[in-house]
Length: 248
Ligand code: 13P
Image (cartoon, helix red, strand yellow):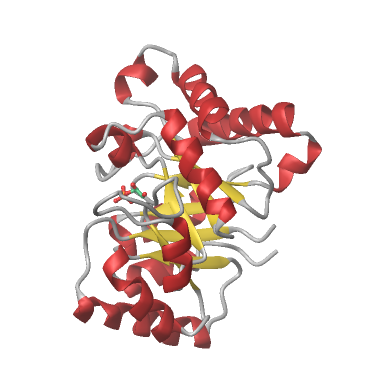
């Protein structure tokens, strides 16, 4: 599988910020990436963004509802996101789990909805600092994986994002050894459950990925890409991170 470098704009971005996507498109045209590239702007910008980038890279969403339609005021279905031009959706981000009380079961429902609509589900997991300090990070992450990833995950329909909660927006990252060990643990869990085909599921690292650390992190074993927050908002920084993927 080609690595995937994905940007999560979170609750940032007005129409004027689409200029960053134009800049990124131009930069990638002159310097073709060695990975798949995805930007997940707020849902308000998906249709405009998809129209603007014209397939030069993919546009995704940050969340979806589990149902295709219905009386769920304010929610958006995976089908609606696909209709607007998204080809992927992030589900189970720790900010959704923390601020919206999403459970593993909710996340599994959203991932299944993404598949139903033909979207790539980027399923997020990760431990808190207290859990890491207590030595339970592996246990927490395998529990989240078991309960948040529905039966039927493949490299085509799913990517896993390992995002330690304590590394998000903090400028702190795990050591190279800690990232490699957790990605190996996640890979082993996926292969145990889904068989050898699960080696094709990309495992992204997320949490304070910057131009300065991207190449090093992206070069670690079993790191199949990155999920980038703050540094994806500026085309220059995000392009530099994309450049951290070495051509195979
Ligand atoms: P930062 O890159 O800003 O730490 O955010 C990571 C993240 O949460 C991406 O989903």
